[in-house]
Image 1 (cartoon, one colour):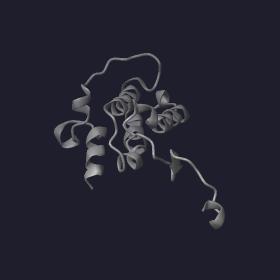
Image 2 (tube, one colour):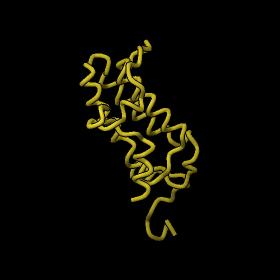
Image 3 (cartoon, helix red, strand yellow):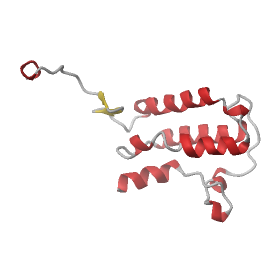
Length: 134
């Protein structure tokens, strides 16, 4: 049929508009494109040269937004969310350097709204659930 209408056949799993279609998205290995995008954005920005305010802006305006397209279609495994949030934590506290620094506030406190004393960073699990309920 593909020859009749002049299309190129493809096989499942395939990528359509940047989303992997036809693969089991419950497996962590199928989320590697999102994790790689996180790493690319971090290597370009060199977050260790930014102030804490700059790193917070980087997290809120770039890193929270990257997985939204995937989150709106698939429920992310807990391991993926843990991995992405650990990268966000590392940027906030250490500036993406290899040296681990002290976390001055627990991550739960950082993710509280600003009105309650937090920094207003979204929890990725809650974002994923909200987008799936839409």
